Structures are given as C-alpha cells and as structure tokens.
Amino acid sequence: MDIFIEPIGRLMNEFSKLPGVGKKTAQRYAYRVIRMSEEEAEAFAKAIVNIKKQVRFCSVCGNFTVNDVCDICKSRDHSVVCVVKEPKDVIALEKLREFRGVYHVLHGVIDPMNGVTPNDIRIKELLERINKENVSEVIMATNPDVEGEATAMYIAKLLKPLGVKVTRLAHGIPIGSELEYADEVTLARALIDRKEL
Image (tube, rainbow, N blue to C red; front, side, top):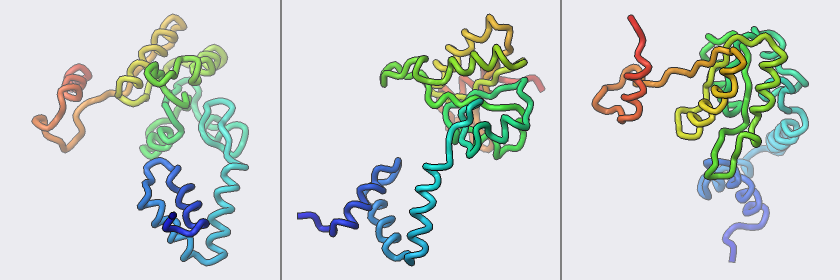
C-alpha cells in the first residue's frame, strides 16, 4: 500500500526525476506546492510550460536562447571562442565579466565508457565555425577530469593543423588553500601551469 495519495505520489515522482532530488526532497517540494495558492501553483506550472516552448539552443554556439541566435553571439568578438561542456558553464564564466569572446557549447564530452563518441557532441559544428569565422584562438574550458581532458586534447589535435591557437584554462591550487591539503593531481597541474612573476 502506498502511503501517499495518488496526486502527491505522482508529483513526488516527477520531482524525484530532477538531478540531485531524492525522495525526501521530492516530498518537501510536493508539500510546498500543496501550500501554494492556486495563483502561485498556476504561475509555477506556466513557467515550466513556457520554458519548454520558448527556450531553444542558439544556432551558432549551442547556448540557451529564446531567439535563433543568442545575445552573446550577436554582440561579441568572434575571433576568440571558449569551448565548454554545457550551457551552465557559460553562465559560470559570464559571472566573471572578464571574457569578451564567444562560446561553443559541446553538450557533452567524449566518454567511451558511457558510449559518447566525438560524433555525439558538437565538434563538427565547432570545426565549421572555425572554417567560416575569423577565429584566432580557441580556449578549451572543459572540466579538468579524465573526460574533459580527453575531449580538450582531441579537439586541440583537430584544430592545430588549421593554424588556430588552442589554449586551456589553467588548473591548480585555489587561492586561500594550503599545499598540504592539495591532492597530487592538482599539485602537479599547478606546478606544470606555473607562471612567471
């Protein structure tokens, strides 16, 4: 016997499909929806429906947009392209307010263990951009894990013959941390990526 009445159980089930949402969190979310006014619940449901109807991927970079081409691609310097795994990575970099170039969202990384090959992510589209636009530098900003590094190296090998400068975000020890607590991989990368003062 299910301890939740059907509408609550169904809503909890839908919430639990979201990443990072377990049964307890799904239950709290469902109870919060029950406590909403009808207007609040309708606004919440409408926001979900509207995002599905309105948000699409930019035809140039693959980032989220409500138009065919996103505002970043419309207004930025196309000579420098920063390659990222997901749209959320664009947001993280944009918060810095330092980068004035454009992005290219791969929508994944090469991951043979999970069956993701170079043909499954937006590498072909990146190569097309390099050939069409006057790109002088490509910054690889994939995560510093095995799959991110493999993807960065694979793309770098494809781009080098095209005469495009390929750079990688520096990795190393975060400011405010102590050397004794850094893992060996981070410490080794910090030593390799050292900069002249």
